[in-house]
Image: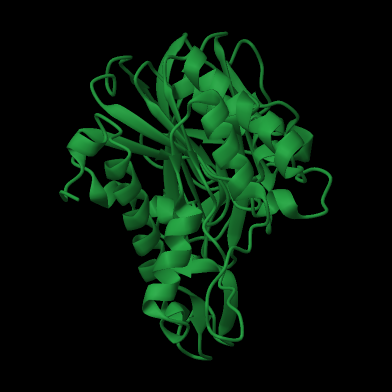
Length: 374
């Protein structure tokens, strides 16, 4: 195990201190690639591991490691300020918008396989300056998760995990694990504001492929952000959207995995008669068409979601989407009306619809491992 305590205060017992003067050298085997960009702060609390931290200024923290599989835990937080960052390891995005509210701390772990003897971690600015309090790296065995089928999720903010500071906002991927037995693992790699194009271009799909083993599943849901004008994200439904989806399908099959297309759920859009309708343009139909062409199962969450909204009615969908009155939630003191993103209740219902489709499509072994018999 490798344990590093970042900052200019006293290092926690058993931890190696890392400060702004900790430049990488082959002799030492760890340190910042460019320590001149690093600054450190100590808040002087009684917790030596969390009291101090480093702000890396865009440079990477590198460590020489024997080849193998590792779990990397990162601790972030600040007694006085909010923290938020994106974390890349060896060039691949591992943690998106990872942080903690002022006066609180957060920690997350991700697996990585080292093949060239070196781990390079970049903590990059998202909404605030990145704070690194500690990094703990543990060697693991290759076979730890090989006995479980893993369901990987590639998607946007409506699928992704959310930090407590966003509650009650949630993505349906957060709740999918609740519907399966312990023999199925969920690896939610969905990222906020992503499209089928940007997810590939930023190498987030590479992260999934590096973890995937034969027999695993990849659920692929995009469309909302593909429709926007941003050239880094935009795709056209029947041309570039399908072209990018083919990349997911072909790479999954090359790994011996099972691709599954998921049409994007509709937004909270209804006509003057209170009837909900598709608000994702031609992207759901383009996905259905590609599924037929490439013999890929399609979870039609678009149709399922519209039917669900119409079943419960316009007013009840306020509990599905992020509709909050001022003062109803401490995270949204002024209230919010969001017709795209879900409250926890809504995200849970969308996860339920996904698992109903898994059962209807007879996707084994996933259907067998559902907790509820549909």
